Amino acid sequence: MTSVPTPIPSRTQYVREEIKRRILTGRFTPGQALVETDLAAQFGVSKTPVREALKTLAGTGLVVMSQYKGVTVRMVDADMAREVYDVRLLLEPEALKRAVRRGASLDAARDALTRADQAGDTAERSLANREFHRALYVPCGNPLLGRMLDEVRDQAALVSAVAWAADPSWEREASEHREILRLALDGDADGAARALHSHIASFVRRAFPEVEEDFEAAPEAQKEDGQA
Image (cartoon, rainbow, N blue to C red; front, side):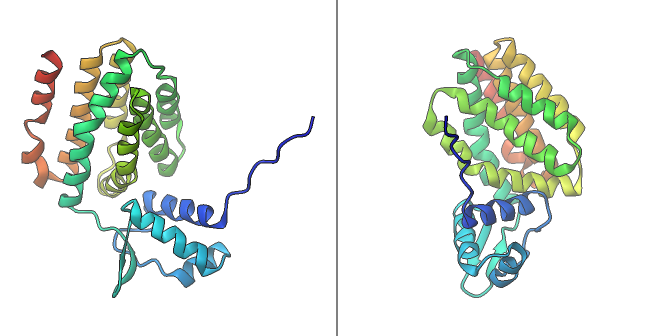
């Protein structure tokens, strides 16, 4: 039997994922200039895959391309956090609720939670936490809803990276993750959705107190919706 060789990632894909990893782990910081020639030298490639990678990352909201300033890592401020987390609050608890109600497997979420607890560094823990949240909403039964949440996933991770650099809150969030998963595994769709809503809202309120007023009533509204 002839084995099929594992495809080698394209140079553009490799560069894109490496730049993304460095942004989401804080190695490239918000506002930092990303110079094509410097990145090409670092990765041992020509400027073309770097240019294409940066265009893709601009489309996902991680970098900003300016005619005058060139390419920079996107700045994180209260307005950005408000926009990104508003989308998450509107969609992510509903996706989890649907996943629980349809009896979807949450094994991937359990595995991600274990990896986060056992992580040896910030980058590994951050990646596991992102996978935990994705594993909650992907099996919702609506692929479009999952893709919509995927679109803001990297921007949410950038907000988290900035917040964690200023005030690490891993233990608190890990405890909240365990409670969300417990409720979901118990089949309590409404309770899991409320816990997830509270988890997301409390994080952005802690990281960006100036948006607290916008999200203050949201958890109660979510609770009322779940009881309707």
